[in-house]
Length: 421
Image 1: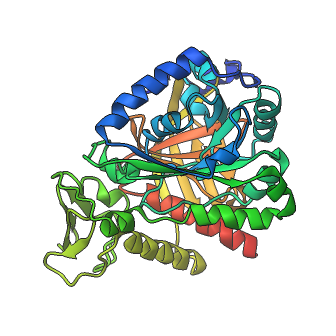
Image 2 (image 1 turned 30 degrees about the vertical axis):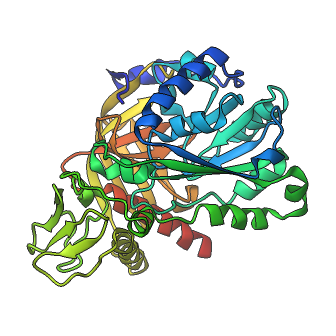
């Protein structure tokens, strides 16, 4: 998927009137039907299967809050298949509205910024549930998983569920990540898909529980490991490109500790520093080709990288500095390329400067519990997004290597440390 891009100066962007907040629209039934037909075609090819648990507790016209794990773009088609013809809104990122705002509103989308406090979001969700009588679908992880395990959930989720006072439904998908992992350059594998939709809590049960208790319940449904699922269910992925881009996730060599020297190509992940090479087999296991196998499981390697980042932060050794291309959104007509700059990240947080001194933005570690970061974002490149509800900066590192995953890990660990302090 691509996005409309226009190159202007930062001064020109400042003159553009920003998109005003609008209440959600009730989803257009004709568009919902079209989406469902398209989804049926794609899902049929993937032998999609559904497991429904306790959904008879939800009446046909009763609005509910639906939480769903997020693995790839096909999640939207899975949701359509599971929920149609029930009318529902989708909480999505503002960039999804660029160049197609009216279409997105007619589909029922509610825009928001990832990992930013959005005071209008809860109001919009409540408006949809109570006034429009539509359900609301939300991906609480906000970002795609890098390593196939659940990403950090917002602490405010339990409070949100309590304030909305509607039934809670949870959708778990299986196979979507294995079919199209984010690191693999949008190359689709032949993997069957399935999903489970479950009625989890009634309004009465929600009222009786604390926000913390609800958070723990939700966390249980979002504790998954897609590589482990592949291995335990003997899901075979024999495409010859299955390790392409794996270096985006496994950026640090466990043998020489060099970063940015890993190369994922074909079925092999190799360090260009020390020569250590691993094969990713058809069932998602790693095996050392010419070295002792340090990690057989990709999430274990990623977890080790997180611990390394945490230690760097504690010891005052962490820093990231990269030249970046800077893009911004204003009126949702285009993604505007406004110039170049420098993005740095230390224990003090983010600092972005650029556009001949016009941009000088600082973001403290306590600003967000995670980071909107993506690979090959809208087919432009690997991206790091910082900012707030007033201004969001989409930064594309230039000649900086695989820094996106480490920057997200550092952001999450910095937030934890800032809370402890």
